[in-house]
Length: 328
Ligand code: NAD
Image (cartoon, rainbow, N blue to C red; front, side, top):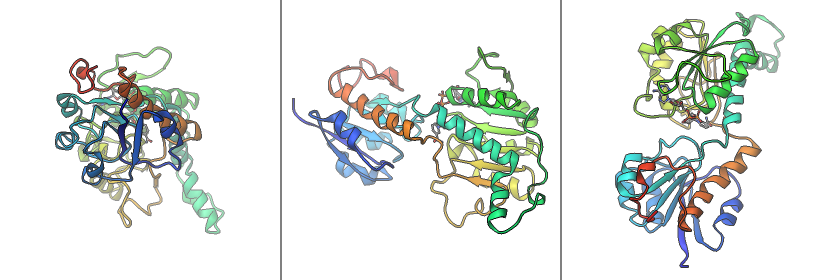
């Protein structure tokens, strides 16, 4: 079999041993640290497969410039870097890795909820600066009995709900694709306005799609309680950053904890930085030593399958079946 060419657009881990092992004997791996198609296309124009972490947007035009590419395998869960309709049209199979970090993101969201509720970061900053005082964290309200509003009730949202129930929180969820009840989870389906008005903590877990882009805007933030906190471990552009800054400036929201921001990385200086009531993490909710291994194994295995003539496991544009460049 002729050696195929697999281009890795970008990655944020140290070793590519798992990728090399998975593709051994089958493909040459060209690993880049690109941010945009213009940066990876010179190497990818003759690729048979593309591995993708964050670089994008991978549009119809970018796909047209990779005429041999049979599969774009995204390392993570969200596929917002890739125009799925254009991929289907072009006959390119797109895959993701839907389960590698569900526990990690749910743990991270819960950690942010606890840190906000108990003012952990505020107190730690104070102690580091020489203070030993309760006042800077006031007011603190008991988490038990408070209401958590989950926007997006899929794999991750449900795991956050289970953890939050163990802390005695009442759960509301908004998810147009989920029915009124979910087996084994004590949570109430709500419409978006009801959730925004009722929740003490609003945690975002939908994908980034046109319907969710900037869904947390001025209008949404005007509906939240001034004592409510926003948590975003999904995708930065789900929140209108300028609207969030306006709400924080006007004390229309108590604070927020953001693992994902728009843009990433967050510029320095930026109006979200340096606030006592804002916690920011550098898009790390997905990471643990276990999830990193599962992350690295997933996408290259999908590429291997396609290059060996097998239908991959986690296809996100199933309409491409029977009509793709791989002949599968
Ligand atoms: P999932 O597909 O299991 O669940 C997403 C849910 O959102 C689905 O139930 C869907 O019906 C719902 N949804 C779709 N449109 C909606 C809308 N307009 N309003 C409300 N809900 C809507 O995905 P998941 O595994 O739970 O992951 C959710 C998101 O988390 C991913 O798409 C990804 O962007 C993000 N993520 C972030 C990290 C990180 O490190 N911060 C890691 C993994 C995933």
